[in-house]
Length: 113
Length: 109
Image (cartoon, rainbow over all chains, first blue to last red; front, side):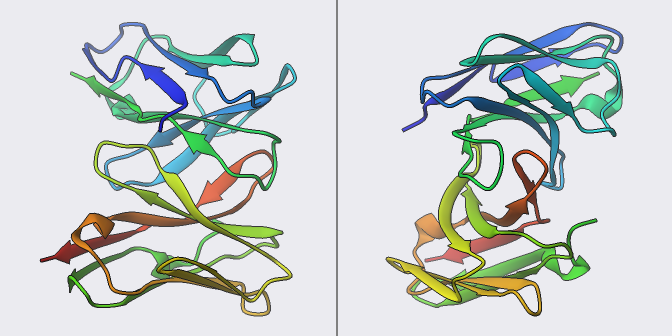
């Protein structure tokens, strides 16, 4: 049963628009993540957020930014989307940041036209 | 990259057959995890094997870990159509996990 909730499930937008994806976890975890999954199913970590410490994958473009109000929420904002941003964005959480089980949401599919 | 190029695979098998998938990694890890991702869903962990374990079983699943060759395998015995999914191995990252390229397994009745 899913305990990491993502909205929206699906979003179509035009190049240059701003998009936000929301993520909430009800597992009581203290670390949350955003992953990007491309059309070949490759999963790449974008951000992790633990106790207000943000770790950013250096390959993530600056138009992407995470936003957290508390440890149960980690949203993803994309300012001025580009075609290569089309992907599935997966939110996950875990008890501790390293070596532990990740619990994923069902993903938010973004299509940029 | 953390991963060996041989990770990307697609396997088609008949229900009831056994299947084994492999992954190799380049840097030290304390755990290897295997995840399954069904169509339209997020990945879900199947099994976690630690660096001091050589084998771990869970139901029809068997994972192995060889730290000397930095490789792991996942076997599924008596596959079912519901085992159709993409399977990933994952190792420790600075925070979170880094995932291999995945193996797409299609099980036909």
